[in-house]
Amino acid sequence: MYLEGNVIRILDAFEHEPLPNLEYVTAIGHGIPSSLLDKLREVAKQFFALPAEEKRKYSRAVNEVDGYGPDRVVSEKKILDWSSRLSLKVFPEDQRRLNFWPENPSDFKDILHEYVVKLKGVMDILFKAMEKSLNLVEGSFSSQFGDNSLIKARFNFYPPCSRPDMVLGLEAHSDRSGTTVLLQDDEVGGLQIFKDDKWINVPVIPHALVVNLGDQMQIMSNGIFKSPLHRVLTNTDKLRISVAIFNTPKPDKEIEPLGQLIDEKRPRLYINVKNFAAFNNECFQKGKVALEEAKI
Ligand code: OGA
Ligand code: NI
Image (tube, rainbow, N blue to C red; front, top):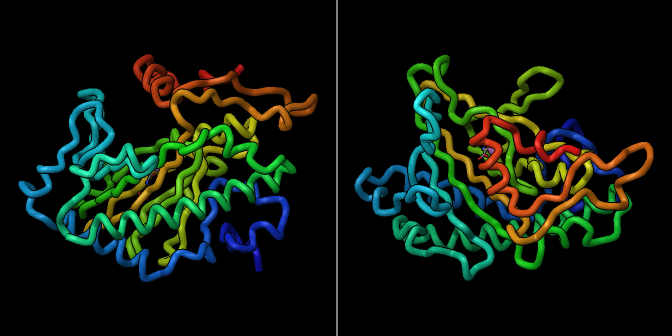
């Protein structure tokens, strides 16, 4: 069975068309060994369990991507998310800032490297499946990302919270990326996607990956693929860990809705955008939503 609910078997994705137009898919059959996924979660947990002063060695500086820390304080009124994060650029390899990659546990670096190399292969297959499902020439999406697109890893740590009714683990947002692939905690749920005016729970499937498309894919696909609003709830007694991998077009690369996806029935919805992260920040400062501002 290729598709059951939101579950997609990745390695079969070529055989079937069209790719389901869902808010997210949970991918199984992705070919990454379960043992590697377990190890990645394990080293993440070990890092998070280190004493605060040890983790502080990896603190993220203001306006930097790489490093460990809590939520960025963007306004005094905002309630902070109940989580900490470790963000690391993983590709292109020459942009890695290895001094932010934990030394402890000692196998952290190797396991992250092994995971992202494999995941990059999965992301390539995904691109091809998405292109095929819309009858596009192979490379239509991936060429907009540029050679050596930017790939970033974000480890999310959601500690137990005594008042889950008061605070979110991660507030509602859509990802700015092109594509995001998320390894969820193997026991603790909490991720929700906004669909048909309600929040729905994304089920925990221990060795599956959650594929969640970002704003830039919505632009490139001329609105066909959606970048859904999602959030994370907290819970009272368990730590939750997730590892998000964001694949983003190079900042100097202009992205645009693909010509093949524009016609009379589906007129062009978005303008060309370069450096979406910067554009997003500008919009955010003005209290605007980037995807709305990019509309024609
Ligand atoms: C994110 C995100 C969800 C999760 O990092 O952008 O949406 O389950 N994470 O941690
Ligand atoms: Ni997200």
